Image (tube, rainbow, N blue to C red; front, top):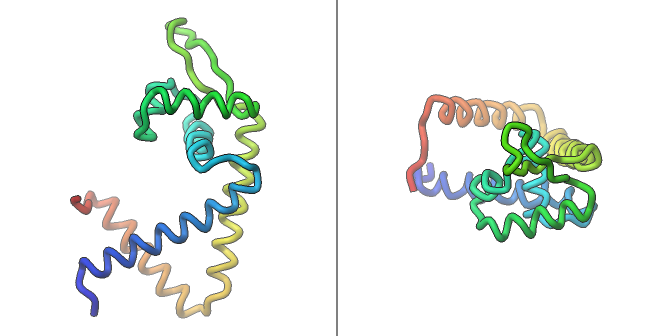
Length: 146
């Protein structure tokens, strides 16, 4: 049986490989990973200020401005003045941007479904149990410290 550190490393590496492979599904649109991550966040949240986006993605405001500019050029987001405070600008995904994100999510899920479907029932049951255990551990507040 591997040590906890070895198991943690294997889980982390696998999660990264799955994430990288699933992100390949997003490249069909020619959008960089950083831009897609921001668009995905906006599609989930509805709208955010540039400052909130920069903090959420752990980048500088200048970097986020460049990312948002690229998304706006592609008609994937628009800037709107916040109704309660006209000085605040919110970044809002367009219908086209939301549609693109939904399509990419569906492609990623179909890829993962096909991967899981290629496994036999016993292996899928083991994976299901592992996912349940990890989900429960994180929901109970168990966090890895770095």
